[in-house]
Length: 95
Image (cartoon, rainbow, N blue to C red; front, side, top):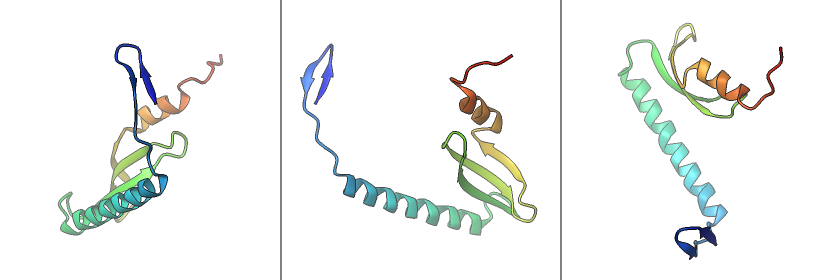
């Protein structure tokens, strides 16, 4: 049940966790297939790959374009600087 100060009380439908995990797995498989197809097509250029990763500090998803020969990250969304700001957000400032 959700309570909104302007709208009164409204009923919400409970979410079945089992169906959510199946939906998540199906969505993840679809993303993996799409990324493989994109990398195979070389739409990003020869020797470049699209990769998805999870930032270890923020646990946010990161999209990277990587040089397939060297492994160097050529571009990234969100940028590394933003991820570090997010990781440090809320931590006490020390001098």
